[in-house]
Image 1: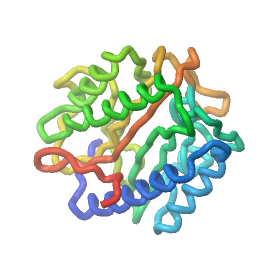
Image 2: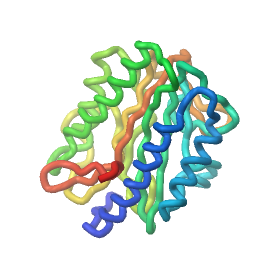
Image 3: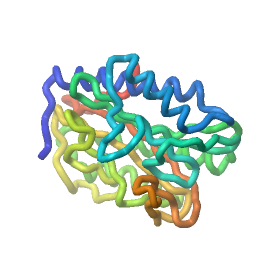
Image 4: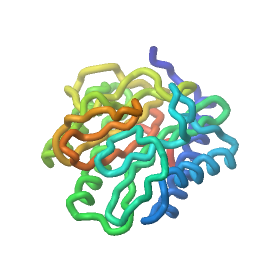
Length: 249
């Protein structure tokens, strides 16, 4: 069931989103060769707690950490551990914060030191596809308009889009209706209305779209070991477009 948020609820979500943005700001500062994903998790959780919120992901369906930390060919849901980042890696930090019962959610892919140009191009296209999708977020459009815009942009570069992993509605729960696929037909799916809050998040492989889940039940990797990028914002639908909630004012 899709919920329409009141102005008060959206402001609470905006504060949750600002806290998420502060985490990402800190991640950009500290991600470098030699740091472990467990240390990144510790730092991120402390930022969330220091800002009066709680980590949305910690203990969510059994997930053990405050952030998902997905390196190189891991698409999503990587569990932070003692793995050390090396020069040339990329890492996606996906983080959620819950403030007074409302959630903000954003994932972002970061470069670790000096990254190969092909990987830089993958990340650029994936980030650009996020904003191509967001251009379609306005009352009267459909979920499929978002999906189609992302798919059309990404496919033009020959990259793979794993169809089982999607964006989603968000609010009092970190995952709500509707799902926001990254592939789809324009004009299809749920009608977008003012007050809906959604997380749009293209997830893209450099190669094939085929992937598998690790034995830990969480991490998702590409079958062909191609690297992955992931960019996500939580937005509220306004009178004539959208407002990004996961950013600092």
